[in-house]
Image (cartoon, rainbow, N blue to C red; front, side, top):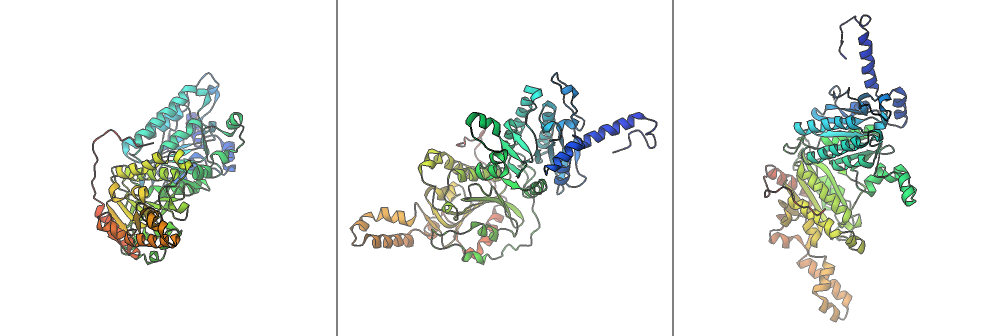
Amino acid sequence: MPNLVGAGTEAQDPRLAELLERMSAIEAMGGSDRVERQHGLGKLTARERLGVLLDPGTFEEIGAHIEHRATDLGMDRVQAPADGVVTGVGRIDGRPVYVFAQDFSVLGGSLGEMHAAKIQRVQDLALKSGVPIIGLNDSGGARIQEGVDALNGYGEIFKRNTWSSGVIPQITVIMGPSAGGAVYSPALTDLIVMVRGTGQMFITGPEVIKSVTGEVVSQEALGGADAQLSRSGVAHLACDSDVEALAAVRKLLSYLPANNVEEPPVLPVEDPVDRPTSELRHLVPLQSAKPYEVKTVIRAMTDRGSFFELQQGYADNLVIGLARLGGRSVGVVANQPKVLAGTLDIDASDKLARFVRFCDAFNLPLVTLVDTPGYLPGTQQEYGGIIRHGAKVLYAYAEAVVPKVTVILRKAYGGAYLAMCSRSVGADWVFAWPSAEIAVMGPEGAANIIFRQAIRSAPDPEAMRREKTEEYRRKFAHPYVAARHGQVDAVIDPGQTRHHVLRALMALYNKRDEGPPRRHGNIPL
């Protein structure tokens, strides 16, 4: 802190002691007792969190002296340094970001009029500047004493979240409670990281649920990190500590551009473009029903150590994540044959569509690995709206204008073949392994329909069914039919997958593809 009144004048000017005391109060936020309580819960304070998140010495605070307006509900007697939220700008890996960090040690981190105004201020500056904004949430929700002014504050924040959507990356870290209206701002952002054991999100808490429905549930079971990651799909990452979560945010930003008109950062890479992926020649079983781990394919073809999976534990029949190819960021989508045979269901469709739109918004090329027998059948899926949810995937891929490269590893049947970024839906390049099976349905089902009469009249129907199934597979269920018809650009050696995909992307990096002018489409939400 600079000397405010000149060296050696502290004893002569009593104002200095008062000013220093006020600055210390702002730095300490809620006081030492509350800071110790925060530490006792395994949580850092707002300023400590910013110290971990940002490059050392780069934080410039905005609005440190702002406090709530006095009201007739006792707030005139309440001390609330910085009104419970620290806001400003700093740098991550040398790149500017705007930040806000709620501090539970001050009025429980509750949001009032001025608290909200501080967040709105950095939201506006981030949008004007075209740089990411990161919110560290640790709040008891709306400040009851401020009534409608607190609710209005949330509304203004939601509006700015929406304005910023698809323009600048918005990342939220849930590091404490986030209840009621407080959950909707995180839900409007691009990525949500949660801390296990301390971060919770829910619309209504356990007590309200118990009084209304009779259900008994803990806060962690209801809205903790694992619940919101694996059951609801609201969260994208769950971490074990504040420090781990903040490190994850720094890593996430390394894949992303500052805004929608810039390209993602390109990092130096020592992984050769033409590195063979010979291990992939033996990874995928030729028998289409046998499972395998598709993440092995992803890790083999992308730059070593670069794959960063998102929403792991939710709809695991589909894998999504960020990676690099030749040092450039890409989004990766892959069916997971070891879970539900890689079928697409309601949750996987939502997970896929949202990720594709996120990548398209921020100039991340899409690499799609296909091995799916179709959409998951059943009344639960049909009644749950699989038609509507599946249509989101078609919409997202068809709408995306970033480079799109598809590799068909094995099964690609029916509507799921189309949904997983086929040529007709907008893929720029489509490769297929020799093991690929591209058809309206699987060979068994197709043979049962096409050769129904021959199978029925055969002396041994089962033997005839097997014979006709193999005949169909041999004649039609292979990639060369699609290649002859121009729906596959090349049938490639799995051992050269990285080489082919990377060269295709290099050819597409200057792609320009603008759709017809419109306000926005009407995605089947």
